[in-house]
Structures are given as C-alpha cells and as structure tokens.
Image 1 (cartoon, helix red, strand yellow):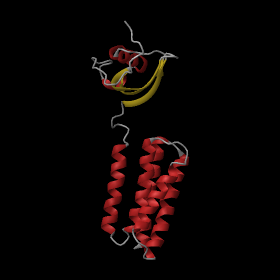
Image 2 (cartoon, helix red, strand yellow):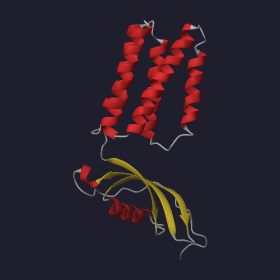
Image 3 (tube, helix red, strand yellow):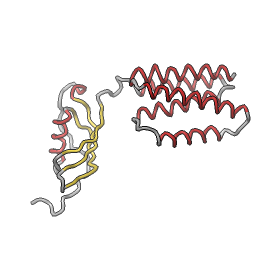
Image 4 (tube, one colour):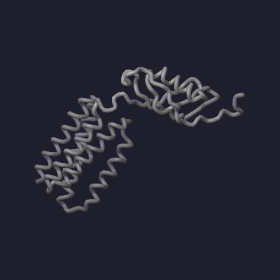
Length: 204
C-alpha cells in the first residue's frame, strides 16, 4: 500500500504546487520548496512508520518544520497556507497508507479547501495595506476620507498602530475594498473603529 500512497502523494503535491500555487502566484522557488518538503516528509514518515515508531514522531516533525519556516525568507500568509498543506499531505499520505479511502478523502479535502480559499474570484476586491501617512489625523472621519482618496476604495476598518507627533506622521493598518470592485465607486461613510492616542496638551 505504500506505493499507492506514494502515487497519491505525488499527484496531490503536483496539483497543489503547480496547478494551484504556481499557476496563480508564479513563484518557482516555492513550487520547488513545497514539492521537496512534501516528498521528503513522506519518505521519512513512511520509513518511521514501517519501523513502528510512535505517531508522536510525525507530529514532532510537523512542529520542527514549522519552526524552521520562521528562519526562511519572508513569505506571505497565503504562501504559509500552502506550506502547511504540503506538510499535511505528506504526513497524511504516509500515515494513512493502510487506509486508502481515508487517504483519498483527506487529500481531496485539503486540495478542495486550498482551491476554494485561494480562488482569484473569492473576495478579490478585499485588500489590506499598512500605510505611513505624513499627517496626523485626530478626526476619524478625516482619516477615513484621506485613506479613501489615497486608496480609491471603501475603507472597511482602520487600526492606528503608531502616531509620531515629533515627525508628524502616523502608521495605519487598513482593510479596504478597491473602488473598481465595489460597483458604486466610493460608498457612504461609516465611522472607523480605531484608537487615536491623545496629543499631549491637546488642541483647543
């Protein structure tokens, strides 16, 4: 059954790394990383399983690989999702080799989730940016208007992460929807929910 599991794993990682990831995001280096990580993990776990090593070893490897990722180049949160799915496929296919229907079902589930969650048409207009503004807005409405003019979209949420009154700048974390995706340009205003630190001494 190990050869069947290997064939399923190779098919699954090909679909994940090339058909889903590379064709959508175009990073060849990560395609190679996902494929190598998956097949390497499958080989190690399959060998340990045949040696009757405890199941905890597989989860231990999962944890170690998660830590190693933190020492790699910066990748996006979406790419982290592909990273963990590649690990999960390798573990599932190696551990569940003796249960082919379970193996096939879990592979289909993981691939279906990634296909749907990363589909270009799903929430395509919703975006997030961290901006440094060269002005400090103390009025939430003024801040919202400024951001919508700069981003040309509907601001959904604003979080102020830093305010520097000496250099007269502020850093904001903005979730917004691009104007071209809203269907009506700029929508009606809604109050932004964010904390604005009070300026020392205040303004009259």
